[in-house]
Amino acid sequence: MIFATKYLPLKETKILFIGGDMNIDILKQEHTHTDRFNDTLQKMSLANIVNGVTRQTEYSSTQLDTILSSNTSTKSYRVLTDISDHLGVAAEIPCHKKTEKTNTK
Image (cartoon, rainbow, N blue to C red; front, top):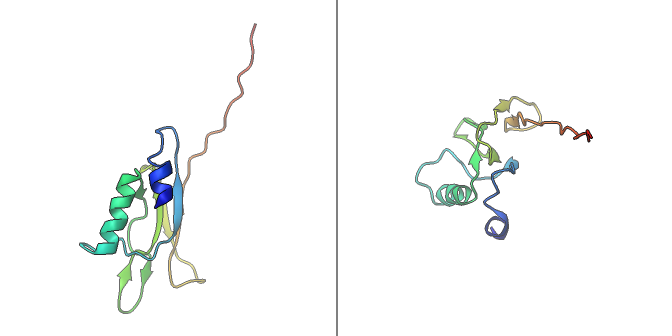
């Protein structure tokens, strides 16, 4: 968490995305690891933008896979794959092409 305290929260003009299998079930309520994870996200001005279960077995339904973002309006998707016992997660990241300023004298 040194990174979190040194570099975050981000300036409003920057957007950050972090994705991966965090091995913390975001769906668990009142759970020590989940509570600490959510507190850290809040301090960093980040939110999980993936909604719903990303790993389902005969015995459990969990959300271990997340995409964290400082832009909560980003759309995310869960994707069915045959390469893992987890669903894939994806996000639509808006990219805007910079336009060059032309000098008009």
